[in-house]
Image 1 (spheres, rainbow, N blue to C red):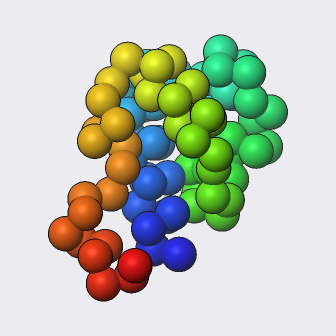
Image 2 (cartoon, helix red, strand yellow):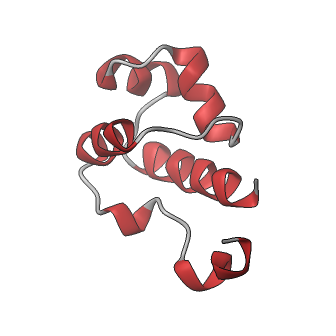
Length: 76
């Protein structure tokens, strides 16, 4: 869905801003690189626990990686 793809785009942006390679970040958070790549491409919906891991590792707020509510209100 567009919602998951938007999350992946924001996640990729934050990872790059933090200076991590995709492989390095996946290793740091304990996620297999292939699975992490699927997250960034918006090919997989993640668990809340995984979201917490990612946000903590990026030292950012949830709002920085989650799509805005107004933009996706119609999808719900």
